[in-house]
Image (tube, rainbow, N blue to C red; front, side, top):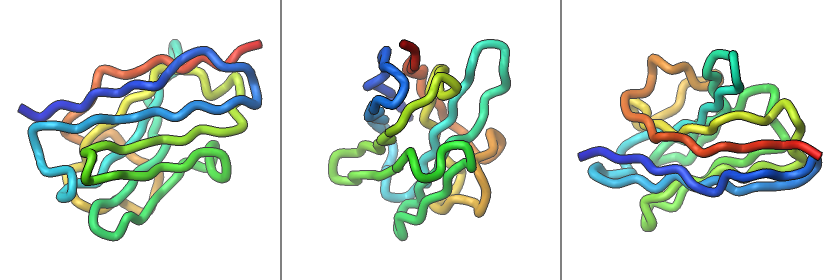
Length: 127
C-alpha cells in the first residue's frame, strides 16, 4: 500500500539547519508531485513546498522562500526538504504528502490537492 515516512526532525537552535527526508513506497514516485506541510500547536496545517515529478519544478510558501529547498531522488524513492536559517516560528510537525497530480500548482500547497500523508516528524527551533 501507499506509504510515506518522514525522518530527520529534531531540536535545533535558531539559525541552524535540518534536512528532512520523505521515503515513499507502494507507488511510482516518478508519477506524482510531493508536498511538505507543517502544523504548529493550535494552528492549521499549512503548505510549505511542493516539487513536481517530471520537470522538478518547485513551489514555496512565502514564509520559507530563500531558506528552504525541496528536492527529489526518484531512484531512491525519496524527497528531501533542506531547511536553513531556521526560526522559532518554523517549529511544528512536518508532513510529506502525495499530490493527486504529477505537477504542483502555482501556489503554496493546499491540503485538498493531496491524497496520502505521512505520520510527520517534529521540528523544534529553540535556544
